[in-house]
Image 1 (cartoon, rainbow, N blue to C red):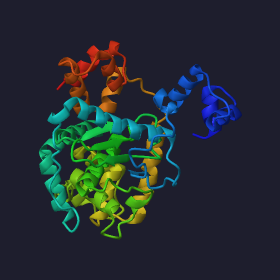
Image 2 (spheres, helix red, strand yellow):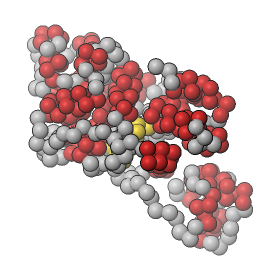
Image 3 (spheres, rainbow, N blue to C red):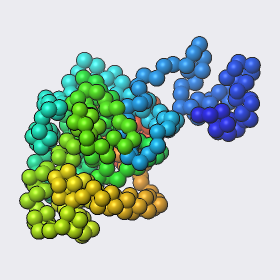
Image 4 (cartoon, rainbow, N blue to C red):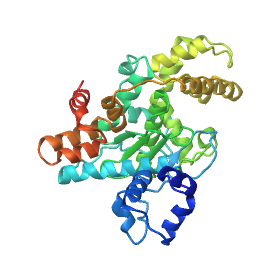
Length: 364
C-alpha cells in the first residue's frame, strides 16, 4: 500500500506513518494492532529485523485479455498468501498422511488438443453424458471443482479481488497443489480458469499468465495459448459440439444468434463466449464476429455485477475454501489435532456458524 492509503486506514497522517517506517517514532500498541489488521500480518512480524520474503511469486497469474499491466494489489497479494498458508495448514494437519496428488500423466506439448482434453476428462471422471445433465454454469463449476479436489488439487476462491486484475493462479507442488480462482468471476469463467490452471499444473510451470495472451493463437509453444486451447476442448469437446443440430444447420459463419449460443451453452454447462470461442477455433465463425459478441457478453456481465446478493456466512466460507480443505480441517478438529480456536482461524469463520457449515460441507 502507498503511505497515504495505509495511513488513512490507521487514522493517522501519512507523515506519522513514514516516521514509524523510518524508525524516528514508534506506534502505540493499539496503533500496531491496527497496522497488523490493515497489512494482514501477524503483529510479531513488526518486531522482525526486516520484512519476511514473499513465499509465493506473485507474477504467476492470468488476467483478463483487456486488462492493463499493473502492480499486484494488496488484496491479491493477501489472497495468494492465504492460499499458500491454507496449503501449509493441511500439510501440518495431515502430516505423513498427506496424499500425493494424482495429476493426469499426459503430455500437452506436441499432442493433439482434442486427445489431450479427452485424457484429462477421463482422468477427472466426468463423462459427456453427465455433463449434459448440468444445464447451467453454477452446477458445472461445482462439479469440475469437485473433480479437481478428487485428485488432490486444492481449489480456493478469492474475495474482494477485481476480476479485471486476476482470474486464475496456481501453485505447483507434488502434494496438494493449489488453484486460486476469482470468486467474483462468472461461474463459467471460473470453470474455464480451473481447467486452464490444471493444464499449468500438468506442465509444472505454474503459469506465467499475462494480459492478452489468450487472444494470441499463434505460437504453438506458448503455454498460455496451449492451456486455453486444451481447457476449451475439455469443457466443450469438438466432436460433441460439431454434431449439435444448431451447429450443423447454421449456414453463415456469422449467423449465430444469441438463442443458438445460449442453447449450446446450456447443453455443455458453459458460457456463450466459451461456445463461440470454440466455434472460432473450429472454423465455424469469424474473428470479427467473435470480438463483437465478446464485447456484448462483457457488457451484459458487468451490468449483472450491480446486483447485490446476500450469501449466508457458512455458504460464503465453503465457497471460498472448498470441500477438500473444509473436510480435512473439520476431521482434524474431530480427532483432536485441531483446537477450537485454530478451527475458527483456519476457516476464517466464527464457530457460531459451525453447525450450518458442517451440514453444508457434508451435504451430497
